[in-house]
Length: 261
Image (cartoon, rainbow, N blue to C red; front, top):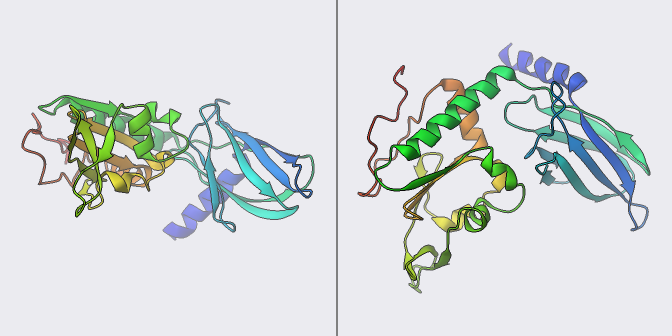
């Protein structure tokens, strides 16, 4: 019954969810390009970092800061289109792609979840503030600029993380550049140590990340994905999987788990 209720909720949301979208004829064999803009159904404001995907073609893009997106050229026909963003009802629909088509949709917000995510995000930022070494937090708002590329690319371009080869031919991998020398980086994804280190972050789309904490200029990186944030914020728990193998220089000045749990 619970699963059926969720499906009914999603179906009901589909009636009120929308994206300003236009299928524009491309200059390539009569194919069309789907361009659009995702907005909030309540406020009309643009929604960045919405995942827009064609599941049948395994193709996806993310909306930019203005809520705009563009899907690759498609042959005329019918396609399944999914739109996903934390704090909003997922939209699943079928669209017909022809020349000069015009479609409009709006994403309906899940108000309670949006507030839970806001609170959870503030707790993740406080986690960085409690660290005994210098740390910077990049929340969902700051990550809005990262609508394409990997989260590692964001850390390099927007967080100033300098990456270089570790210098060990046998181990390989990437290190942070500290005072001109390679320095190993401890990487945690959703609270668990990453075996791939910085190189694993090359495979994580920036659009899938909810929050990042960067410690000591690159000594340690914590990445929290949207999927994980959705679960944790709903449970009202700060972080139940606090890694037990933190660098010695990083110690928190107060408990991480929410006091109510």
